[in-house]
Amino acid sequence: MLAAVLEDFNQLVLKDVPKPAATGDMVVLKVKSCGICLTDWKAITGHRRNVTFPSIQGHEFSGIVDEIGEGVKFFQPGEEVICSPVANCGICHECRSGFAQYCKNGAVIGGDGMDTVLDGAFAEYVLVPERALYQKPPNVTFDAAALTEPLAGCYKGMIEYSQLKITEDVVIIGSGSMGLLAAMIAERAGAASIILVDVDNWRLEFSKKCGATHLVNSAEVDAKEAVYDILPNGPDIVFEAAGPLPAAQLAFDLCRRGTRVNEFGVTTPGTINVSPAEIHWKETRVDASFSVYPRAMQQSIRLQEKGFVDAGKIITHWFPLDQIQDALATMDAPDRVKVMINP
Ligand SMILES: [Zn+2]
Ligand SMILES: [Zn+2]
Figure (spheres, rainbow, N blue to C red):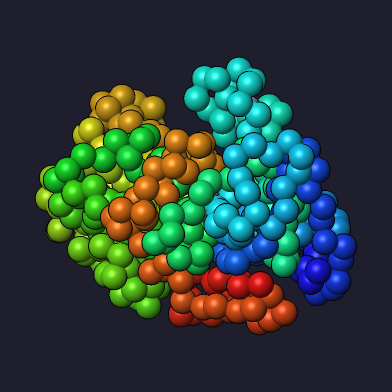
């Protein structure tokens, strides 16, 4: 089968490799769609160092069951499925406490965040544990279904952790894939105002399609002044989905008393200035959201099945697997959001 094998940093090689075989509780999927996530791009370019070689990246995917191991109980060849990149054991203390994303015995497929990392879906076929699979609703496209995991991450952060309620005012910092998916969830959940803050006007304009009610370019204006001009009483939730440390700083700077902050985007080391006393007096509630657990995956599928959210709206580019180099080059393009590989 054709696969994009990462042999070293900046050495992504398209080559023929043996097609995996399904044994035990493992399933071979024919990959239909796999999104390129910044996590993949960071692994390929060396911005992320915890990568083993050779490996296959790609963790946002959907496909068709091709072959099942003898221990597979719930899926049959030909079924259309969505795969979670998190295959948790279901038995450890973390799993049983409802925190499958911290599973001690888990494996991550084509990504990052657990000790065991399986090959991902920048390939014609991928081998995955049955427990990571979900049925794809027939009315959800393979492309949109491939974005179930990032959508689940935003759902988990915005709804389950930050507990967005109808009529609340939300500021989202960062209008990349995650910020836009978070905006769609906030819109559907009944947010009154959804202010998108970014430094890129093209992406800010794009965010209008995803529910943004106000746009703030923080490179052009003072973001705090602009947000308080729109919301004199300040935001109920500030959702940081940008990544750089100044975005995290801005999230705290935007708080009024009682604002809930979600540190969703920053994963790189470093510190910002936050005063515990100020957090006390303002009763700032700080949440974060790392990875996904099964309930968030199910809810994310349901959001799409019911037509509440169309994650496919954020896809701007499509490439076949044999053009993955062009797809990666597009990651630097000014007018892209989500880039999709269709092997
Ligand atoms: Zn991702
Ligand atoms: Zn576990």
